[in-house]
Structure formats: structure tokens, C-alpha cells
Length: 111
Length: 123
Image (cartoon, rainbow over all chains, first blue to last red; front, side, top):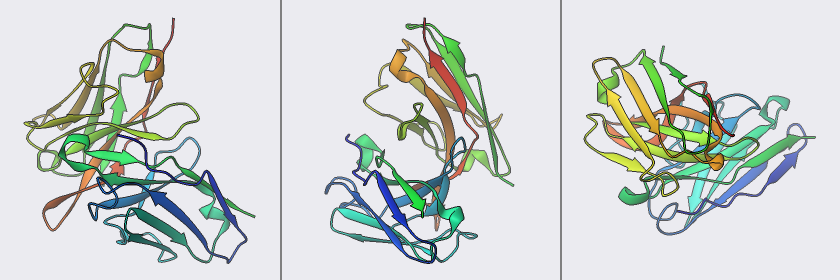
């Protein structure tokens, strides 16, 4: 199972928006509405930000939103804040044989 | 409060074995599927293995199939990962994570993570 493709980096100024793409295939992202997104600070465990494409767990700011079109999912962070500077990973269910696959990761920089 | 606490990591020679454990608390462990995810130094996340709530079904990434074995002891709320025939490329922080459910159905996201345990494979 190949990793989902994310851009290595993304950036924006405080208050701006940044969108991260996550491209897979019809066997993973395109085949199921089980796309999730994780935020990770250096040396820390990942934190769930979005699940089932566009659902936010309690406690996650509504500045974070998710969407999907075909084989590509996206995470948008609106109103960028300094604390949003982190690595972000997407993940998708990939069927009963492959189970789950992560994206390559995107480093978000707040300028 | 959900807590996941991994242990068992360390330095091991190539070809060696290690057993990781993840002690869970704050939720009904026996009702949820669990998984292991790893992260090599400076690299991205890689899903490694998953197990159903009862332990009857197990799943592995191709990179570890035949070498790693996932298991669970619901009476002790503990998840395990047996690592055999270790290679240098298995060096990573290993996280256990709880699978998220929505309306009683497995939803294949990871809602709680442990702090990770470092496995280093080197001679």
C-alpha cells in the first residue's frame, strides 16, 4: 500500500488560510469517507483534528475544516495562528486487506 | 480520561526481538479496536498493525507481515506488539492508538494516542 501524497510544505501569514491536499486512489481516499487528519508537534504524539472527511472532534477549533473530491481530500486551516505551525498528516481507510494508510505529511509554517 | 501508556522499547540488534505493550485506561478497552503506528526518526507516520476488539481479527502492513504479531489481553486492558526478525528500518517511535467509532460503527480514525516508545535496531 503506497502512502497518500501530500505537499511537503505549506505556509501562510497569521489570519490567512492554508489548504493541504491529500491524494490517493479509488482504493483508499476515493473509495471511503474515512479520511482523517492529524496535527503533530515535534517530539509529540499526533492529535486528531478531522475525522470522516469533515467532522471535528470536540475541542478542535472550527478554523479547521475538511473536504473531499474524488481521490483527493483537503484540510483547510482558516485564520492561521502561530500555534497552527506543525506537521499535518492525512489518513484513509484502505480496505480490509490494507486497513489504513497515512499521507506523506505537510509542514505548515506560519510566516 | 483516556490514557494509553506504551512500554518495552529499547536497543536491539538486527535479527533480534522485542515485545511492546500498551496499557489502556479511561475507557472500556474490550469494546474498541486498537492499532499500532510507527514513525522513523525525521520521517512520517506509518500504520503498522490493527486488531479487532475481541482479538479475533488482526491486520498488518506488508512491511511487517510475518515478523510482527499484534495481540491483546482484554482482562488487563493491554495491547501488545511482538517484534521479531528486526531490521534497521524498523527503528522508530511506536505509538499505540485507539480506533474511533461513530454511532457504534468502526470509523477507522485514531482518536487517542499514547506518548510512544522508541525502538532502535542497531549493532
